[in-house]
Length: 199
Image (cartoon, rainbow, N blue to C red; front, side, top):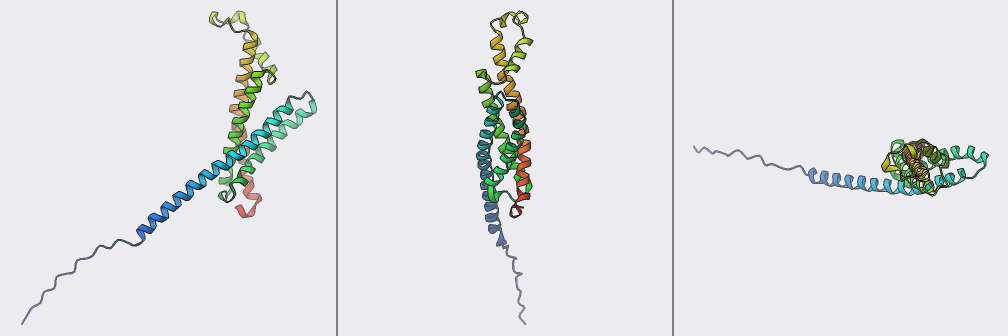
């Protein structure tokens, strides 16, 4: 009587066939996210240029010595800020699908347009045609006879000029860019609500 022995078959390790597919999908998702991010940045930069031009025009209007125009400048800034955010979302197109994405691209556009406006305001302040009263106020706070000996070379005109430029940096460059970014992000968040297909 013959006894046959069979070796137990070794379990073969089979890699799931879906692993390479999963890697390909992950790579594609990363590429799409990178492309969408660069598209959002490009859209916000284009919209920020438009917003910067709008705010520059409003600054020039504020220099006109006509009291009625001063009441139009502040609402004008609000309109430009909100429009900058909405324009950034429009430029982004299909990359903005909800209010969060719209707010993000609007914030970037508003912040950069505020930076541009701050630079323009500093240039105008340095020429002496912008923030004149602010510079004179700074000059009166630092009379030459009360300055340290190594600062006696500073004339009231130089102190006023430095005060104007520094004031433009703080008011329009720092505070202005943050306020511009805030209102532009609101504009970007509003856009998907106005366009049903975007939400």
